[in-house]
Structure formats: structure tokens, C-alpha cells
Amino acid sequence: MIKAIALDDEILALKIIENYAGKIENLSLEKTFNIQSDAQKHLNKYHVDLIFLDIEMPSRNGMDFYKSISQNTKVIFTTAYSEYAVDAFSINAIDYLLKPFSFDRFKAAVDKVKVNNESADVKYLSIRADYKLHKINFDDIILIEGLDDYIQIHLTDHSKITARSSMKNILEKLSEKDFVRVHRSYIVPVNLIKMIVNQNIHIGEFIIPIGETYKDAVMKLVNK
Image 1: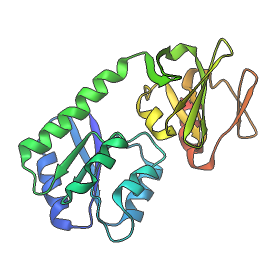
Image 2 (image 1 turned 90 degrees about the vertical axis):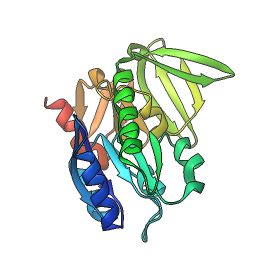
Image 3 (image 1 turned 180 degrees about the vertical axis):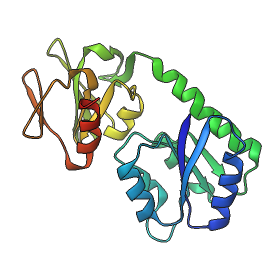
């Protein structure tokens, strides 16, 4: 089941999404929001697989809102403006729906989420760095560190691969059940979280701080 929410400042747009979502099997539209702060509170408390998100809103641009989400949530943008499409796909949007969109177009976008979820069973990361395409087994990753516009992947053989990417984009390529973001600058494999001391995760020689935003998600994993 895909757990989704919708955020749009237009109530009518939310009603249309609610109507369409109710016709799709394995899609549960948990909540709709027309105020960003309310949606943010929900995201801080509950896991969400997918967000239907407007772009032009009174307070903050929808893409900026999506970039601020700490959990690994997929996005389908729903907007009346075509000029944001390139930027939307550059941050790994699943789809970009131009209003007014039909039920068939809406369903096709949701089907892409289902296909994306099925591909999550892949056990390796493909990433381009140093003019080469690297295929890295998940089991070989100790941690991923964010360095401004780059990420550094620390491997079990003590080597490192540095690539141009945001933390959010790299997280989209990883299996959600195998990796978790624990800090704005760190992603770690779930199975390596063995010891937490004073809000720090100890993995081999690394001591990784747990960010306040990510603390609840990490503790849920540890207490499973």
C-alpha cells in the first residue's frame, strides 16, 4: 500500500486528487493539506511514501518545500505551470501533472510509483564518479557523507568514492529498508546500527552524530 498525502493551496484541487486517489487500488490518501506548516507537522510525525505537491503556493515554492523534507518521500508535482518541469525532474520527481489532468493521467503517474517501488529490490548503487560508472554493492557501503554539492561513499575496503550529488538524490537511489538518513550529512546502512552512545552511532572507526530531525526515525529502527 502506498501511503500518500496531498498539499495544495486550492481546496478544489485537493478534492480532485482525493476523488482520483479513491479509485486506485493500493493507494491510500491519508491526509490533504492546504497549509504547508500543517503538512510539515504530519511529515515530521508519520512516514509517507508519496506526496502530491503543488508548486506555486503563497508561502513557499513547492519544490523548496520538497527539498526540506527529511524522510525519503517520493513526489508527484501537480501544477498549472509547465516551466518548472525540468527543475522538478532534476530532483527526481516521479511525475509532473499539469492541471487540469485527467484520471487516466493521474493513474499513470501513480503506476510509476509502483514500478519505482518494485525496483527498490535492487541490491546495488550505480553512480557516476571520476568519469566512470561505479556499481557498488549495498553490503560494501559503511556510510555516505554529504559534502556541500558532493557525497562521499565510504566502503568496507577503506576506499572512498566521491561523486557530485545531493544527499536527497542519493537517498532516492538506495533501498529504504536498507539505509536511513541519520543526520543532514550522513546516511548509514540499517544493519550496521549496532551501538548508540550519547546520540552518536558507532560504526567501526566512525562516530556519526544523530541529527535532532532524524532521531525519532533512527530510534524506531533500533527498537524494532
